[in-house]
Amino acid sequence: MAAPTDAEMIELEAAAFRRLVGHLRERTDVQNIDLMNLAGFCRNCLSNWLKDAADARQLDLPREQSRAHVYGMPYDEWKAKHQREATPAQQADFSAAGKHG
Image 1 (cartoon, helix red, strand yellow):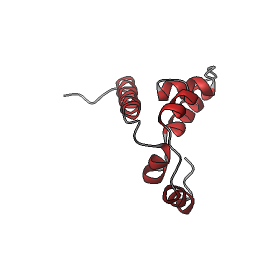
Image 2 (cartoon, one colour):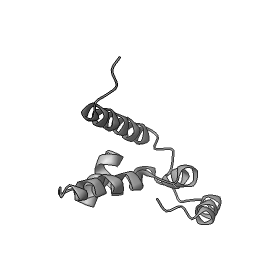
Image 3 (cartoon, one colour):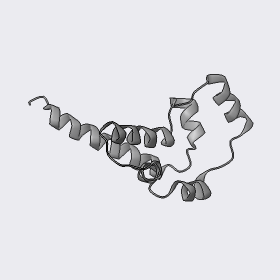
């Protein structure tokens, strides 16, 4: 079995990213603050990283479009359907850790 070429590695990384995004779309029960508190990144971070990559290549990817790509719908719609108010414990954990993606 041969090691993947650079181009194949990019394809594998893209497939892993798509799988992660799909998983996060399915797990609407997991709040962004939970992700931030546990992993130091959230859906917004992923969408920002996607936009940063587009900006680095001088591609026009508006922030709302990158968010819709990660969330699977417009961000405001996702928030209305799935986002809950952070609990005092979640907010305290977030503040204590200083995690800001």
